[in-house]
Image (cartoon, rainbow, N blue to C red; front, side, top):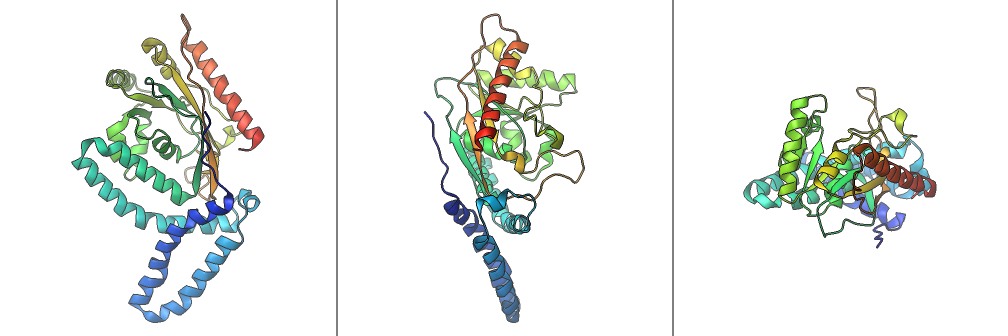
Length: 314
């Protein structure tokens, strides 16, 4: 069964900005007016012209162009409005999580969905995860917002995600990462042994295991390839525990801050667009199948579907 949550671009354009613009109205016009009333005559005209640019010059083709003026205006508006709204909501959510232990997954879903909404990322979900058993769920990893997509896509399913501990430096991410994440430093043997123990404990408790088998985000020069080489850990885990693998292909997140070799590089300018999430059928490890064979089988399935999505442009 295929489920399509996409909707027309015109509706998407309106829904992307009404909440940020409402907040921006408050901070850019109302607050300065309260402090010093004459500012209203300057700010209101600037604000109206920005709104005109955002709403009346937008089109699907226009947004595809890289680093346009509107792209930059949109990004600046997004960041200016995102944090004043997000920080109080996130603070309340953290208080709730500390008070109600089992609420972490629902609140992570709420915050992730809100963040994607503000960023203008609309999700088109095709397929789904069966409820019959627990799975190892593998995603391709292109962007900083992939973690948000995971939390929205896997709604209210209990999971443990294997992740790079460096993301814990990000604000609020560390709080939630400690509660449903398993940090792994692939270069350290002790870390890998600890991860194996944590994953085994999670499987016994009935958690799904999430992992990006590529290990990290794509670099800019790897965009054409689409997928990096896979790490063997998830496939060895699947064979040992006889757990099926669900490959999930995410398409279009490459436009939202891919990994870059430059320290301060990458694409920080973005535009609202639909992100396709295609959930493939479960892949079961075969009798006497080696981890390398299972790894290649899953990678070929994901690469084939990713190429298909590129060809169709969905």
